[in-house]
Length: 159
Image (cartoon, rainbow, N blue to C red; front, side, top):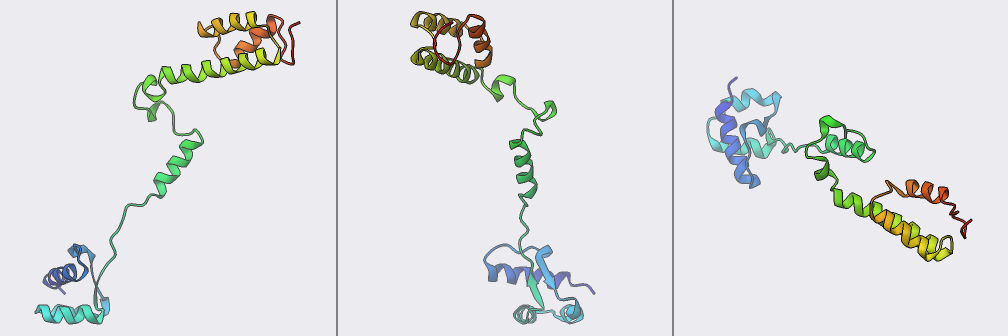
């Protein structure tokens, strides 16, 4: 049974009915009534079949976000970030300035807390502040190893 013309007519009618485009692939014809639809030649007959429910439009298929959400969830965990997944330079992915600000602010915060608690004198604080500014320490823990080696403990007061 060839129902191409019937599908075309149904698509036109359904488009007007729904107010949005209905293509040939979205036209559904009830398999039990395919012979009846094949004999329909006029639009009026097709219109009646649409009203009876023999011909319907399938719902619009969307793009599923399931896989995208799963990938995003994995990235939050730190996966899928290897060399093959990277586009952009190291500086573009994490700007040097942002990294520096994060590092220096945490180092200065630790130094300030130690000075305020009395763990180090103002002159020592100034000395280590300048060292931190000069980029001598990779991280807070790296800075703390230097402080311990210099005889400054974190509980309070110098040794």
